[in-house]
Image (tube, rainbow, N blue to C red):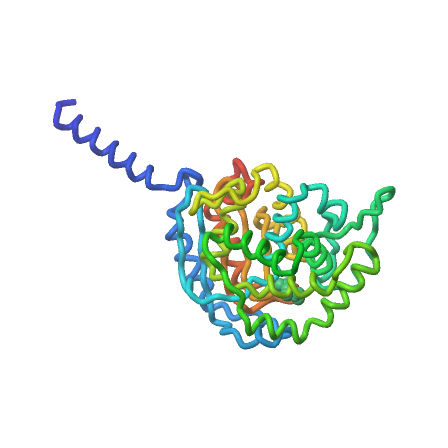
Length: 349
Ligand code: GLN
């Protein structure tokens, strides 16, 4: 090989190296370009018109059903987006993950397991029968439910410590802010609308007190729970929150350690078990990803060590999970090799 050719091939190698280097190291080296994968999913599902906005909270019925935003945040802090990233929806049940995480951070993994449980209920998120029918662990009396359905979530909110409701709230919103990497605010119209119509959650709160799963002040717990569900978020906020869980509790964009790394696997396990309510099994079967949905139309999903992803799209299926969010996240994650159970598989799932 004469000299100029060798120089040229070394140059070509360096260029190929540079191209590889701009790939995200945390993602499968064989995987496609994440921005293209996100763009393709946006184009593919943009015109999907299945599902219906939640309307049992009147303010949610008024949200534009065409709203569609996708964001993916890698554990090394890269952000890939498509669609609407500005419009905020209410976080709804996705907040349950972060309040559970906050209680685990403060009081340890045992506290949640003993007071609420970490088992799927197999029932809808606001089922009262699930409270009545709950089994308890022989010996300890710990209920077999979880913090991602309303009874367990209201109970988790009641466990956040603070001398006044304001002090508890400051901690709850603070934890959400840290995970999202910015100051979030409550969507007051949603908060008022749900507060006016949340008699069912009040009944659940009272019942949880009656069974001793909430220790006191169930009214305050229901109110703070309703407020946390009304926090406004866009797809990028949600993806950053998911990215924090993917990155061992450290926000990959701000660098702040929000949750101890050794507390993260427990949080992800409950998400895998119950994050999409009674459809959690089907979701896990197809994606392998711990995830959480909210009736505002958001879903977050976590590929541990790789990325957090979120989609906002209000129309829901019968189980209460966003139709487009499920489709787009599954498509993107499977293409990028996000399924933690799929090591060694070519199809990514
Ligand atoms: N705030 C809603 C409720 O309590 C949250 C439900 C959800 O997102 N699944 O009914």
